[in-house]
Image 1 (spheres, rainbow, N blue to C red):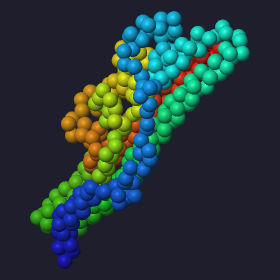
Image 2: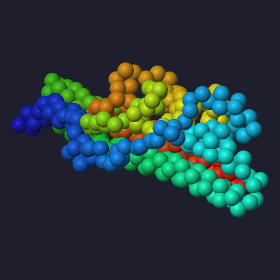
Image 3: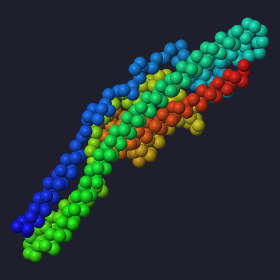
Length: 314
């Protein structure tokens, strides 16, 4: 009777392994109440055609050689280049009319710079929200998979102990070998699952993908308003002046997050409308969103430089 009990170990091995593998099924993000587009702005970003940046940057720099290059670029981005030139033209006018003219120009410039600042803050908030959403889903999977690995580790230890006891208790070579082999396979299988456990995955859809335009670099962005997109795609805003900020971000993603090469499935997952994510994929997505957010927030430094110039010519 005791021998028959130990002979059930191989069967138990199969049952436990199948149960462990079944925990890798895909979870729908709606099941954990993190679905939908709650990070998306309630109202799409609006833009004024009159203040849209001009694309012929080299011609602008040549035509405004009397202004610092960075001032020309940021003034063009915010639609204030003509106003900045007007402000400079009336700098020396100390008459009452001159003061009134400067006050009017200053107010119009400040209004547009305020809109640009709010635009940056709004986009950064959306990216932060998307990053937190991805990170929250990743933590959910990490926690679930951690508990799964703990159960597998405990099961492996118990199996090893039972196998040892069984091989000592059973005296006949045949049954003893069966128990030893079955217990060894079970223990090895459970150990392998803890080392290379895929764990559960989650279906996460994002129809509005803030990473997509950075990856595809379209002429006109469907996500980012003209001011932000101009800064991200104009090479003169980068420190090197050779490649745009968006292209630099894309290069870093490809090198560090995808190890120099990205598969078509990963491209669709990260830069398309979403799909089935593993925990590591969600951590990667969160990191990419945070990196993009930091780059966009840094545009405030460019706005600050423009403001310092305006103060210097008043």
